[in-house]
Each structure stands twice: as structure tokens, then as C-alpha cells.
Length: 279
Image (cartoon, rainbow, N blue to C red; front, side, top):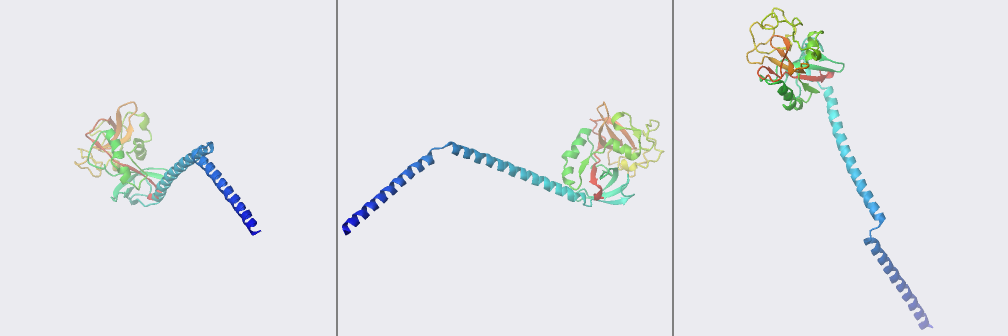
């Protein structure tokens, strides 16, 4: 009886082992088949992974760009309330008032209010940025390529003065840079060919701050600080309509045209743009 039970038990164990081995073999076979035979589902999953990975990378790049823009706007917002200029003479935000300004390079310079808008102001420097002279094209490039826009980091913009802004500051309401080819004198606000120098020096000008620190000349009594070490004047950013000339401001107090290729007489007098809160 005991022998029979042992045989029966041996048969059962044998059946169980045989079945387990068969199941393992089957699983091994099919597992091998799934592993090495790529299916449509595999390809779909690979494509999805690649697409999603590319999308994530693009989004990360966009996030980086947006963060850079946010940082730039944050700096601008901070600069909007930073004290850049201090009033030295005249009334606050009045045309012709003098301010002492540090544009961001650590050097204080004198500027005059040239133009006032709702939220911002333009100020023109009291002299040319250097004693050098250059053509009009090079003057335009000087502002862009001479790192003023980089080193003067506390201002919104650096540019050449606009001819019309100078006319408006002087009060010449009958002259427009966009439709005129004739120059005019600051003192009389009209064309004056009757004297030498060109503008009548017997007429005192209240706007000599616009051509201060220019080269001395016989009969030029308007500039506050005539000197032989300075240019005759400076270029504006505007060309004369239908010509190859540009408007320039000259030492005896006139706005007049000269050919853009002239290199010997005129330099760069920068204009900075600031928020009213910077003053």
C-alpha cells in the first residue's frame, strides 16, 4: 500500500515538473519572439517617444527664451525708476533745462531737455561726444557701433538728435524737416543770408545750449563755450528731402544742409531717451 502511494506521488510530481518545463519553454519562446521581432506597436511607440522628446526640447527652448525676455523687461522696469539725472539749472522737465546725468557708464555729463512726451523725455548732450569729425553715414554708425547703447545701459535709447525736435525746441513752428530744403537761424527763426557769419550775430539767441562747445569764429558770440579744439557743429539724424544732404547744426546757431559725405566739420552729439521717473 505504501509502495502504491509512493508511485502515485512520483507520477504527480513528474506531471507537475513536465508541465512547468513546457510552460517555461513556451514562455521563453514567445518572449524571444516579442523581444526580437519589431511590431507596428513598437514603431508607433518609438515615433511617439521621439515626437514627445522633440516637443519637450522645443518647450524648454521657449521657456529659456521667455525667461531671458522676462529678465530684460525686469531690468527695464527697474531702470524706469532709477535716478539717472539730477536737475542743475532751469525748471524740471522744461525745454532747455540742464541735467547732470550718468547714462550708466559711471561718468556724469551735462544734458539739456530737448523733447518731452507723455512718459519719456529726450536730452541732448551739452557738447559732442568727442572732438572728432566724420561723415553723416559714419555718425549714424558711431551711435550703433561705438558701444554707447551698451555702456550707457541706464537709458532707453541713444541716437542722433532729430532735426524737427531741435526746430520745435527753438519754437520754429513754420519749418518742417520733411518738406524743406532751406536752413534757418535759431535767433531769428528765419533764413538770413545778410551777414557773415551766415546768421545775424547781433541777435542774441536763447538757444545757444543747442550749439555750445563748437569751434570759435569771428563774430560768433552766441555759443557759451567757443573753443578752437571743437568741431564746427554736429549732424542730426535726418536727411534733406530729395537730396543727398543731411541737416546739421552749426557753430553760429543755424540749422542748414550739407552733403552727407562731408567729413571735416561735424561730429556726434548724442541724445538719450529716459523715463520721466529717471529725472
